[in-house]
Length: 447
Image (cartoon, rainbow, N blue to C red; front, side, top):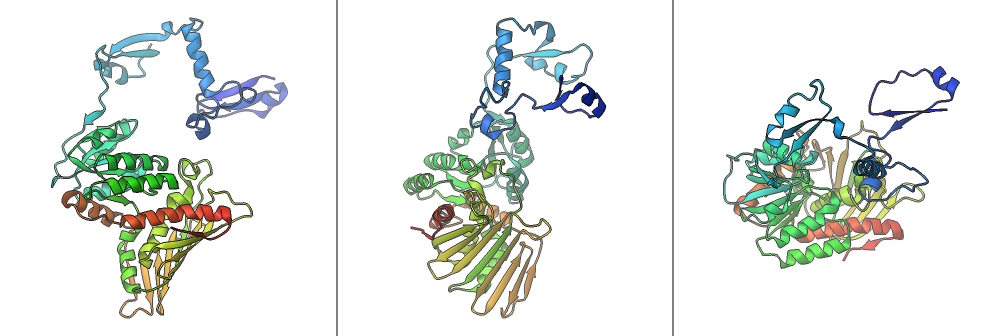
């Protein structure tokens, strides 16, 4: 009746008979104990009750540290060498050397923490304005940096909380510096624009800080997660210098396909149907957390609200959202959103997470004045009843390249915001109204 616990990752070659005869139990352990990789436990501090689980990640550490402090556990015999920090290669050069169990790196007594690490000179810099980027995640690495590099954008800082990821990305981007303290760039007069690409719950506070520091802001969607944050940002923007701009990364309106679509459809009221085959994301992923990610409607469907507003050339005045299921939660990601526009345009956004991956992710249809335009997955635009136009094809282009090219122009030469601030506010309020409509089961007007 003993318990066999697996710690780490090894191959399993167990015989049922061994466990059956002695009534053994088998368990796989988290690396540091219960709570490891649990967002609610590790980041929000929601502890497990003692009666539910005795040895959590925190209690394990506390117990071991207590045992070391009281000399019950003696780790001194495990230390096989002490090396000065400057000679770190003696340890890291050969971590498998015979007889080495635990190595200690000794820091100088007068050592200080350097928040900014020079990486190398960006030799493509032009003009007077420079960029600072907060966040060094996958989106920044795979999308933002390549787009900025194509236009020789001058990047002075890349910041991340851990520092190491910032340095790795700074080398890739040929940025001047990597830093673990983003406020360094806010205090640097050479930086006139800051790009924010962090988790959604950090957007509002960082936007506020950047505006108050007298710098323009480009923040990935969403702008913020609630009405209070939005009101604070509005106030800060109105108090900012006239040369300061705020842009949200609603990149789809900058796609050549979207630009062509708007030009062909012309003015007046339209019917718009935008369908997003978004795909499934597990509920435990941070974007599904209303406090951290805002849910996928506020956090991602806002892209399509902005696109519909761009095509309608008007602002949303009322919203109604219906969701799949009998009792949908506010972080639902299977919804249909109805948008009513000031100029009479009607738009429907279908944001679905229950479709097949083999089907196109995005499709936009516009009906107006006996014309129909269909945009298929940002690769093909077809026109029906459109004089002189039948189709436009090309590689997938969601607008990132043009968006960041225009942003770099503003960094170097100044100019108006890429998207009118009033439009950004309207889109953000409309995304909040979606959730409110779901709760009230009614249309919600946008002020």
